[in-house]
Length: 79
Image (cartoon, rainbow, N blue to C red; front, side, top):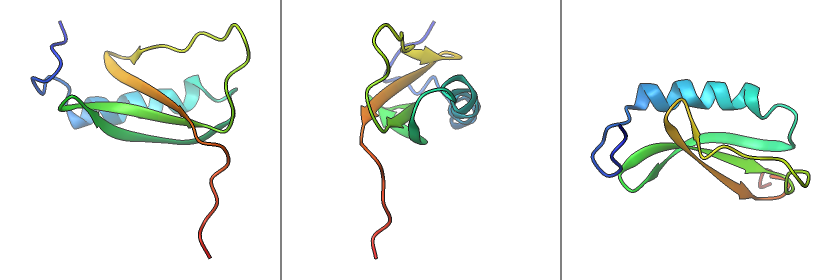
């Protein structure tokens, strides 16, 4: 059972979920996948260039780790 705010998700679990997210969302227009904190827990953050196609269901967790999505648009390096 996950109890948010209790540090029950380890960094190693988040890293494994991040790797799984890279494969799971390969068909979406992903511009970045990282690890973040949500309510004192580790979570996976997926940045998308554009909203997913209508009807696409995005999971709230991967391997028990929370997932957060953000539409960021294309990411460019500063010059």
